[in-house]
Image 1 (spheres, rainbow, N blue to C red):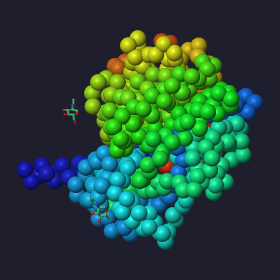
Image 2: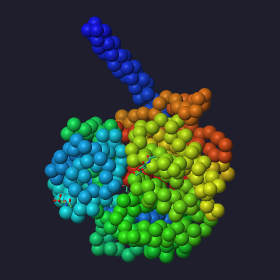
Image 3: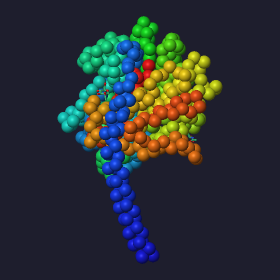
Image 4: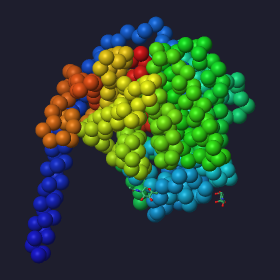
Length: 475
Ligand SMILES: *[C@@H]1O[C@H](CO)[C@@H](O)[C@H](O)[C@H]1NC(C)=O
Ligand SMILES: *[C@@H]1O[C@H](CO)[C@@H](O)[C@H](O)[C@H]1NC(C)=O
Ligand SMILES: CC(=O)N[C@H]1CO[C@H](CO)[C@@H](O)[C@@H]1O
């Protein structure tokens, strides 16, 4: 018995050592490939000429983001690590805040929660004062996407209510539909890095936990002003985002349906030549997500989401409960299978609206970008769009337009299966042609590896930047 145990220990030590050695070798080889992958992605990104200043309209949301080191902030506010990870739909007390953070922090899953307790929220905002490395920035999905789109050469209209000083931060060529307001809502972004420690808890990947006490964005206050100017603006693309603010918000009876019905009317009024993209985000309230399905998702041409939101939507489409947490490092084959399912179900007879059908599905993950496009649809340049999404992911997280390969790593495998089905084709990651595209049935798929940023500046707004950047090349 004792002997066996010793042997076991020696063996596992050897196994660990061997695995470590192996990983180092593979690692070095990969590092030397990074430059080639980068050069090839940049080439793919540049291959496309933009149409003359495309017109894009983006709704909704707008707020002031206060970005802080989540662990430092909780410590300063006196919120102690909780041994009891629980996911609360919304947060009423310090204990619930600690339990919620303990739930999402270890796996490193992005999450956003309403704090109904005003005293607690103010206390947290106050605690950010004097913390090192606290940043203030323009937040909300619509403004972040708008700035990205304008930087990429678009003329943009946004449905947001912003204060004059936040409007200052907008790029040229961005027009806000609502008049300036006196006060804006604050969203607190608790960022953390990979391996960050909170008590005994350690995060598996860099991400953020967002809390707010926002009562205007959940009811889409800017909807009417946006609608009033939309027809005249004549966009070639309409982007809908920011609806996650509705999740778990304590609405008055009937209020949620009323607002969503207005949004649906807006979508139905849009000319067929204008593409509509919906950028999802984290939803945990099944009833909100299922309302979105009928009021919004079935009236758009394109969907964007991350690796958490994909299985979440899929399980709802399949009629089960939504998944709050999923693997933060999913394999390509898993994601592609889920994308095929979502694409197939949303294009099936029972669900599709007569008006539009889903022709584009973009999933952004830490390790790779995947885009599915219907054959014969009007979305162009999918390969370049996937490359651009991948480059934007790195640029955003590292906070720099220039990519330094010493701050990058590839975490996608050397080759990937295109499905979990047995005998599926394997595609090697070729550094000279890092974006792989192929056709299946009635659609095309492109997968691009991400040069994952290793010195995280920020993760918040990542999905918005990435989605917007890739859309620009496709209209
Ligand atoms: C709201 O938060 C404050 C500050 O943390 C706390 O003292 C109070 O008990 C909370 N209220 C409720 C109803 O939990
Ligand atoms: C779904 O959630 C409800 C309510 O939380 C629960 O009663 C039910 O057992 C769950 N069903 C499944 C299949 O997990
Ligand atoms: C990479 C990149 O452009 N990131 C931007 C994402 O959007 C925010 C808000 O517009 C910018 O501050 C980031 O620089």
